[in-house]
Structure formats: structure tokens, C-alpha cells
Length: 130
Length: 130
DNA sequence: TCAAAGGTTCACATTGATGTGAGGGCAACT
DNA sequence: AGTTGCCCTCACATCAATGTGAACCTTTGA
Image (cartoon, rainbow over all chains, first blue to last red; front, side, top):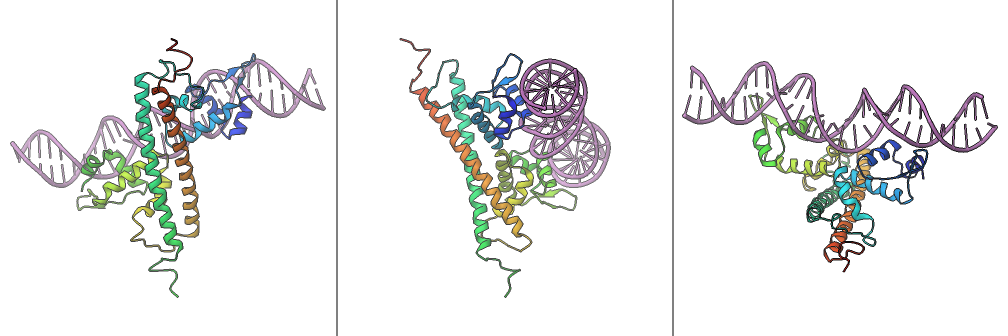
């Protein structure tokens, strides 16, 4: 598929798709005319990228962890693909992801608790003095 | 405590503490000489802010959810503090936080699976062809 | 008293992710 | 053929978060 359709199907501006390519996150083929040709799988991949970006990961980090997401099925674990350094980097990144999950979970629960308290009419000093 | 100590204790540069104040996330008192005076609780608050920033939230959103984090104990739910619009905004934000959690969890698991597969020597098509 | 350390404001620079537009080629349809 | 729409590259602008430094005042300690 061409860039416009991918943009439509993902909601991500074509400008960003080109940017992600520049950052090494996408590698579309080129048609004879120079147009980018994306496989169908690109839709999911772009969604992955956007999700991770929204979670505060940088393109640099995403580039490292993206190869892990092609499913653990057809892994092609060349030693140069997963050097000990890369593995260590990945472990560290999992650590940081876990911290983010914990942080978000804590804050989600706090906000939910706040909303619940508010909704159950625990409004002490103003508003509903009947 | 003064800004330098808060910076030391949180690892956040003083510049950023002033910026967070400008964004309405911190409101230190001022001493007679004009120096900012932070309460001890500021340490935790700054950690909250940093955590949420790292998770991709903006200062604008953090400003909205920060009041929820002072513990559901001493909530002072004035109606102007939690208007229906604010409540709705909070619910929507919880939604987005949940999406982030899901995304991070999925990706964490994928990376872990990848690492596990790599470590258990499942390197199919290259490297160890004996 | 003098110097060093740390505080203040103000302002400009940078970085990463994005917006926007110019200038030009390719493709499809009337 | 000409128009419309999509693609290309290149470049400059923007925005939020952050770095950096100047110019100046306050506290601290030799």
C-alpha cells in the first residue's frame, strides 16, 4: 500500500510515516516510480510505534525494541541481532517500562479513588448543604 | 527547604523546578528574601511529576490530575474544584492512562518473551548450524 | 571584609516530535 | 491535453521539555 492509504488507515500523518522511516522504524520498499510501498503489516507496526511514543519512549529506544515485536514465532536471532549488550539494553528498558507501568497504575488508581469519593457525595464544605 | 536542596533530593535540576512552578504544578512559599521555600512533601510531588512526564503526560494534564493525588483522605471537593467538566476530563484521562498501561504491558511481555527465547538458545536459522 | 555558594529573573539555545508549505514528478480520469 | 490528486524531497516553523548563561542579590564562612 502507498503512504496515503497507510496514513488513512492509521490516522498518522504521512509526514510522520516518513519521519519514522528516517528514524529507522519503518523500511518500506520502493516502487519503480519511487513511491513507498508498505506491506499490510505496516498498519500494526505503526500502531505499535504510536503507542510507544505516547508512552514516552523515544524513537531511538523504539528502534531497539521493535524487532522483539514481530512475534516470538519467527524470531531470527542472529548473534549480531542480539548481542549481549543489546540484551542488557533490552533488560534495562524492560525495567524502565515496568516503572512506567507502576507509575501509571498508581496514578490511575488515585484518580479513580478521587472520582469515586467525589461521586459518592463526600463534598464536605460546600455545594450540597441541604 | 530551598530549591537547591529539593533539586539535590529529587535529582531534578532547579531550572525544571522553576518551570514546573510556572506551569502551575508547584506553589512554593517565598521567604522574605524572595527565596522559594518548599515543604517536605514537595519531594514526593516532584517525583510524581517526573514519573508522569516520563510516561508521556503533559504538564497541562498533570496539572489537572495532581489535585487527585494528595490522598483521598483530605479531599476538599469544592464544586469549583471538581466541576462535571473536570470530572469528565479526568475520566477521559484515566482512559488514556489505561491505554498506556495496556500498551506498555503488551510490549514489556513481548520483549521478555523475546529475551527468554533468545536465552534458551532458540536461534533457528543462523549462528548455530551444527 | 572579601570570596564562595546559592538564590533570583530574564532570555536565548537545543532537542525530539510534529506542522506546514514550496516546487516538482507521476497517475488517473474527463 | 489538461486537471486533479497523490507522491517525492527539502526546508523552515512550532511546541513542550530542558540546557545554559548573564546580571544581580543574599547568605555563609574564612
